[in-house]
Length: 182
Image (cartoon, rainbow, N blue to C red; front, top):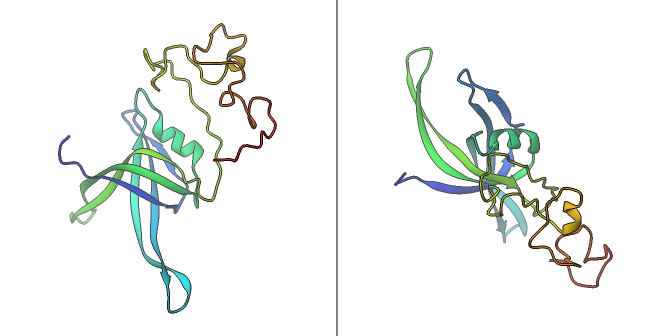
């Protein structure tokens, strides 16, 4: 849709994501991200927090991507996240018949910040992914090296022997190769 305001926010989750299933069967998750500006005060020689923005967010499961469920299963209060989505405005009426308007972030993409943390990502298999597996790969491609597809009857068309990116650990042998991490 034209004129949408797309933003990216980096901040901490203020509470555990709350997953709900609506009467119509739709699945939504709600959470709040708190983002603060940090600046260096040269007078005190210390870092200081600026004003904090608390942004209410929502994400929905779709037929092709269980985003809301993935958020609820992967993220928790206190985690630093990077979220991208569309600002939306919603108007509602209170019990006293007062009209209120709120601005929320409808999240399209989200993940943990790896600046001060690590994450173990598990790619979900999607039977509705279509011709390219939902991730730009040919149908049937399961990722990794040929060793990862052993016994599945699927051959990795992109695997090469000794592929350092297709196996765990460092390099192809699982030991430190002396190459710097990046």
